[in-house]
Structure formats: structure tokens, C-alpha cells
Image (tube, rainbow, N blue to C red; front, side, top):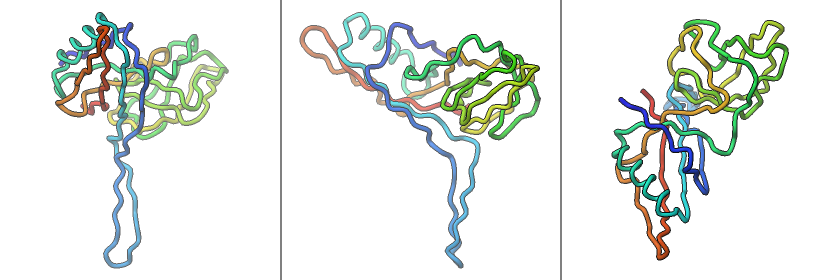
Length: 198
């Protein structure tokens, strides 16, 4: 399946962004005690609002919506509010068969703050948030606490994107793209996406 690149010249006027957890709670019918279990599969969800689009930008966004064709299409989406850190090295995955919420990495700028709490990164096409500040060691290695947990184990030496981290998203429903037009050839639309769990 082809993954569409988001057009650089189209930026939302407003954005709602949230993590939808895949944890489950079980309540004992005998004692009433509660147990909560976290599973892989938590995903990002966002709602993007575009106000007062010019004719050319409206055409581009309408064509993009048509190309996605409901929930079947896939597209790279970024968190436009929070940009990644630059010039921190060319980080890659350092250990095979990783799962869970700590990502072992290497090839960072040595002995430096390489990620900040609240930064995003992409590994194996999965978008993750860094949950604590991270400093690399004298060899450029770093253990990065992330959320949500890894869904699939990345391969050793897989690239880690920190400059422009992205996730692979799809529409939340098949009825997206209700453009409202006003005199003066301006349009407005809100589009809802969620991370596609492949």
C-alpha cells in the first residue's frame, strides 16, 4: 500500500492531538478487585481544522481527501506544534528484538541531551513520545523511554527519525472531507485521523 506524503504548504489552523490507550480493566465478580493490563496497540488520534483555505489550498486538500478514499488510504502526519531536535547525530536502533517502553539506540552526538521529555521520534514507522529527558553516553548510546510501547520489534540499525517525526495515519471514518464553502472562494474543513496499526 502506498503511503501519501502530507503536502508541505498545507498546515492546520488548529489541531487536537491525543493518545488512545489500549489498556483493559478487569473487575473480579467475587471480590470487586480491579486489575488493569496494558497491551501494545495504543495509537495517536488527531483532529485537524483548516480555516479560510484559498482556492489553490482547498483544491490540494480536496484532492488529498479523495486520494485517501476513506479509511483505506494511508498518509504521513506530523505533530506541527512540536518540532524535533536537530544536529543530534544519526541515531539508529542498537539492539535487536526490542519490545516494551525503552528503546536502546546508538550513534547520537556523544555526552549530550539528545531527546527532551515530550519530544517525538519515529522508529519502524511508529510514532512515539519521549517520556523523560535523555542524555547520551560517551559512546553515543542512549536508552530512550517511550510511549506508547513498541508494537513491533525494530531491526538492528533501523533509522530513528527525530528531525521530522511522523506516524502513518488513516481517516477515522469513511465520511471525512465535508468542506464548507463561503463567498470569496474560501473553504473550511476538519479532518479526523488515527494512527494505522499495521
